[in-house]
Image (cartoon, rainbow, N blue to C red; front, top):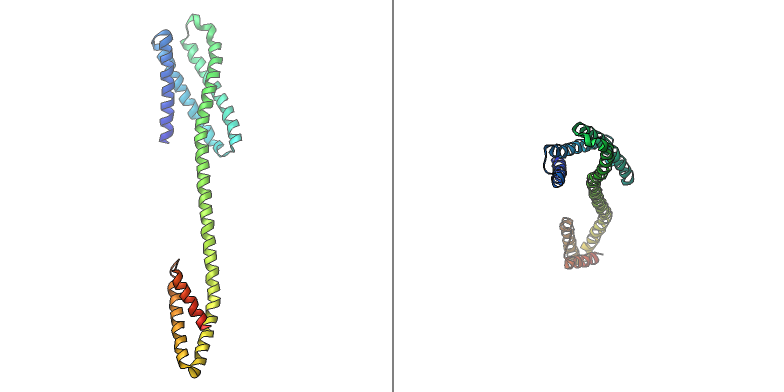
Length: 229
């Protein structure tokens, strides 16, 4: 990704600048110092990019944190050793007669320094991916929790509708039988019963389309229900 290359170029660019600056402080600016500083950064850039390819090909980032840490540490040491071998060859190519005895000292010093540097690189690289993986897991967990609550609400609503479907027909039939019986005995009460039943049915149809209703409407509906009973 673009961010990966920006970080790679910026990090190894800073490393090259630091090496060149330290060389200039101790021995002055020279072509050899520039070559060594830029060469070390080029080796580091190529080595870490190859290390990253191994990480992705072997899918290390999907491992648990402990197993990932062990592999990243071992990989850093092996990569640092390979970098030191390449650097020693370059150093041998650029050496002078007085520097011949310091090649092995430089090799072990470079191995140690680059192992520490690659451990830092591995910590940053793997740390970013571990944090991203944790965030993705949290998002998935939150989504699953929300989906569970949504399905539970749907189930409860289905249960409520099923209960209403069982109760309402019986109540309606009983009310109609009551009205039929009152027509001959008490026509006035029969008309009142029809009015109460009509208002109750109208409320039931309108309330089913809303999530909330005023308390006063519920109380009035209960009174109509009791009046019909």
